[in-house]
Amino acid sequence: GRTLSTAKGCIGCHVLEEKGGNIGPSLDDLFERRKEDFVRDKLTNPRTDNPNSVMPDYGLSAEEVGAFLAYLKTLGNRH
Image 1 (cartoon, rainbow, N blue to C red):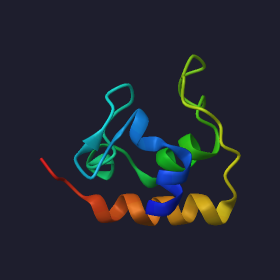
Image 2: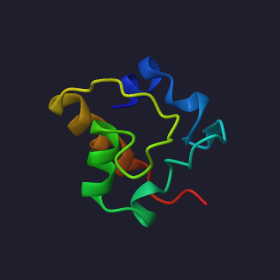
Image 3: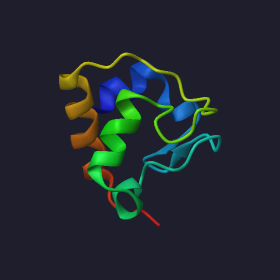
Image 4: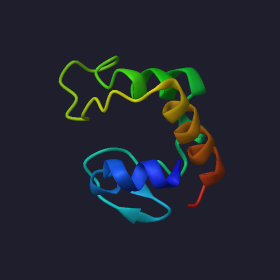
C-alpha cells in the first residue's frame, strides 16, 4: 500500500504519514472519519460522492485497492 501510494503520487494532494499536500483530506486519520466501504468506493471511482472531484481515477485493481486500504488502516490517528 505504501509503495502504491508513492507510485501514484498521493502525497501530492493528501497528507500521508504527516507529510504531503492539502488539496485533498489527510489520509492519516481517514478511518476515524470514514467507513471502509466509502474509502473502497472512492478508490474505485473517485467521483462517487462528488462529480467534480479532481482526484484521478487510477484504474486500481481489487488487489491494489485492498493493499491501499490495509496501508491506510495502519496510519490511525496521528494528531
